[in-house]
Amino acid sequence: MNNFNIPKHIDFVIVGGGMAGLSSAAALSEMGVKNVAVFESTKIANLDSSSFGESRMYREMYSDPILCKLAKESNRLWEEQELISNYPLRKEHGLLFYGESWDEETIEGSIPGAKKVMDEQKIPYEYLSSQKISDRFPIKPKDHFIGLFEPSAGAILSDRAIANWIQIIKKNGNKIFEDCKIENIDEKNNSIEINGNYSVSYDQLIVASGMWSNELLEPLGLKLDIKIWPMLWAHYLVDENFVDKYPQWFCFQKIRNDDGGLYYGFPVLSRNKDNIPRIKVGIDWAPQNLICNDRKAMAKPFMEPLIKLLDNFIFNNLDGVVSCDETFVSPYTMTNDVNFILDKPKSNITVFSGGSGQSFKFAPLIGKCLAEKALNKDCSFDISCWEINRVLLSNKN
Image: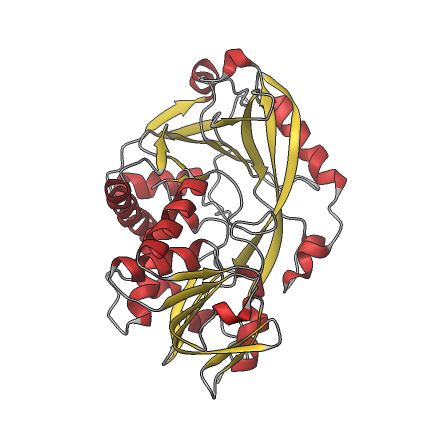
């Protein structure tokens, strides 16, 4: 980083170049706001960030009626972004919720809860028996499993979305600075300290720093009750004959011994360097011994047992899988209620955190709300469920 390229004052400073930081900078840019800058501590969408990867799910199949409504609004905003960018940012192919049906809610909801909300909000879906699931997809469900299929769901092409936000930001004359670690927020002087030796003042600050949130916010009296879950996901190579067969899916199973029971997967969306088709799959839980209150969770050695559990699930439950190609670990910043934090706790500081592994699908809505709050405008949507007070710990002001 060349400090001489960074102005000493920037009207709108955004800390964090992930989904929330880039989408809010893009939203400000689309509103015609100038003198906006995003600061990323390493590289945009780097390997260790929660924004890394080519795809994320979008859906309206939620057990929470409020999230379901906000997901609908987000899908509308995605459509608007696609019209403006003139190329697709999503791929519709449907989503299968399948597995055991019980009333307890997981971090992804539940099959009965999703069915209830979709019925109430008149969202189209199909009910599938175990036999119908196996007849339709290369999936081997247990006899007592059931499924719900939401045909209008699909995948966000997250790498395209990030590229689109960057284009919007730069086209408006705003800036993105990489390799700029924010060491400190000086609330008294309305400034940030970069790489320990450079200071930039701001009028408005958006903190969207993911697993680094408490390191920056706790000195301001804003310690958040969040935890970092290191989440395993992988690419598996599949037989060419199955390229168009796989659905996008969540599998719900009760916890058994060391197996958290929740798994997910995508259809074939890409190929590896040898042009072999691959699917993205992952474990949607983390063992308690890997969960931390700060980003040290990502520093712990990864556990082979988790990779074995994923292998066991994939090879026993999907047809056409050849081998595991590569594995990754991404950080989920989790709140206890699996809802986000999006609020303005101070007159010139707006915060986003606690993406809880599901925030990317809400990205255009999150970006718009962050921009509106930074501009001291009323939010276009009711996001009271994301208020910060519910997660502030005892040292709050």
